[in-house]
Image (cartoon, rainbow over all chains, first blue to last red; front, top):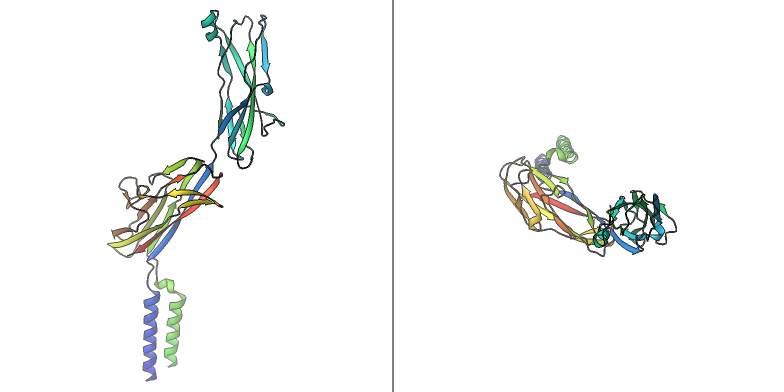
Length: 175
Length: 157
């Protein structure tokens, strides 16, 4: 009797364990991460100044006229804090074609060589030259800033035709 | 009686200590790619379709047998989070697709908020799910990295 009971218990146990634990896995999960890096776009605004180099009296000699960056144009560049921005600019040519179309004369070209400096403070207390290089924006309450000042040298050749010379200077800021 | 007790004990130990020998995994899932929006400028939105290489990609298959039915459920966040800051995220029918082949053509769009029912799934045949989304980086949020998680659950019907 006892043996029969034990057999029954043994059979029931084995059956239960198999039916419960041998059930295969029927549900699986995987996770995939979502990620985005949010950045402030670059803004550039002119603060003050101009690149007017004034009037130059021609004296039949090679002359360089300089406008210091501190007396030139100043810009504020804004973006994401501590993000690096690349500053690009190049020499440009000024011409007097607009002036001679009005008053007649001889076409002439002047080379403008920009002088650019930057500071991380708006008052330009600490100034560094920019040579088409990479600058890091500061952090002012969650917005990054850097400030630029642009002046330049104007090369006036011997026998330079007279007139008002104009040109466009482009400075590009990018991440 | 002692003999029966010994047999009982041995069988019990074998089954309880090595249950994995008896219950093999037969449903498999792999996250192959995360959903990566890269860099987004504040104030702009970004639409990342399921066909983009940066969409989330999940693969799964079963080894129970042929002509089985699989149920796929997605758990999707409504926002990406960076501390207390959030960016809303939109998933929809046009940004979620599945296919039996790992290629752009032949994908079937499905509603990510409903259970996807795939019938007649053959043994060891991989299926793929791609998940894209639309993200709107509002203009009043701070810079930083925002994250979230998609959970894909596959069940045998």
